[in-house]
Image (cartoon, rainbow, N blue to C red; front, side, top):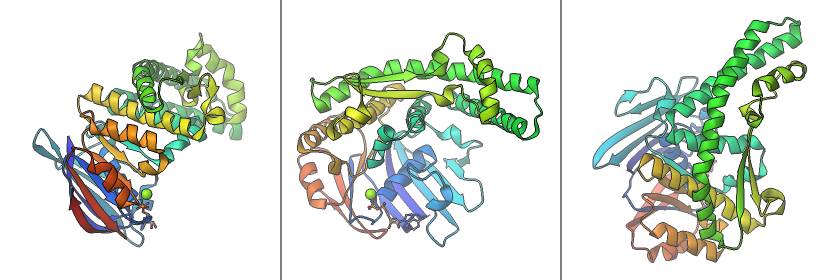
Length: 370
Ligand SMILES: Nc1ncnc2c1ncn2[C@@H]1O[C@H](COP(=O)(O)OP(=O)(O)O)[C@@H](O)[C@H]1O
Ligand SMILES: [Mg+2]
């Protein structure tokens, strides 16, 4: 599966753009601010129906315009498949696959998988647990449609329960039956999500370990573990026990919405004790393991989006990555670089089909095949 064509209208800094791609490496080069990352983000939209960076669709409309559209033509075993993503101010986002509009955009997830590696990945280490849950949820959702539905159900009960707690705080009226219904919903879907996250992590570990070793060598061992309130023996009791505190705080303090994934190196927290290089290796290993597991589960190679990847790497890691990329493991790759000559010299040695697109202020300046 690869992206053969993309057309943008009023997406971020692109008024109008149409590009054709080959199945190999697509290098997007241009000065900072020219629109390289925006183009990767448009591809992210086609795959995951949203931006990788800005969750507010409206802010991805080109300034002073009222809508954006992104059209992609993918090729899967030679037959073309079109994906359309359109958003108009104050309207519902529309996602179409081969001219058919989805009833729920969530139905699209997993059909055209992508893996994005970007400087923002460091948020996974630096930020709170929500960023990590979002990452793992997004990976699992790409390979398991039911998981996403379970998450949405859980979110529904959580929101209702929180609304109930708020009402109680403001009006001192308590509806015990309603609370029990919400607790039961959260327990039911929470249990499924917990089991899936646990199972996923078991499958993910060997991929993650081997990617880290390839990047950083045998000397260090990274740990990745999963912590959940659902790990305790009587989670139903924990909900009841937390009730008073929940009423005081007006939010639910127990549940899988508080799960965390713990990143460690040699049993020390990566955030505090990992060197910059170790942190980079850890993040790259997470993303490359994501690629490997999605590839295994869906039996197709995700499109790889590499944003300014060369900037983050020292020579040894860059070499290791380029060697990995040159193997048959990967399919189509989009990469951005503000320094064309660097990309040219790094990629020229590879045997793969490659194209370079020179982007300037939201326009294509020229294309070079090399
Ligand atoms: N909604 C928008 N409308 C117009 N321009 C935008 C919008 N969002 C971002 N931009 C512009 O896009 C440019 C950044 O593009 P980006 O893809 O990040 O560049 P780079 O080539 O450095 O990756 C900035 O000049 C920014 O002002
Ligand atoms: Mg950029």
